Length: 54
Image (cartoon, rainbow, N blue to C red; front, side):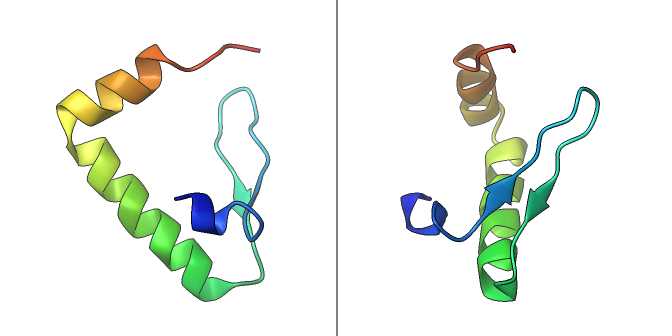
């Protein structure tokens, strides 16, 4: 969702994922897309396998 990159702010914590925005529609769009990604086993496995640990 590259169209949301300038609208959303992420604040990852050790045990919690936080996202902030004053744009309600952007948050709703991200939430809907994230839900689809999480429900697709192949897609979520691919995303997690490419993640980098801090």
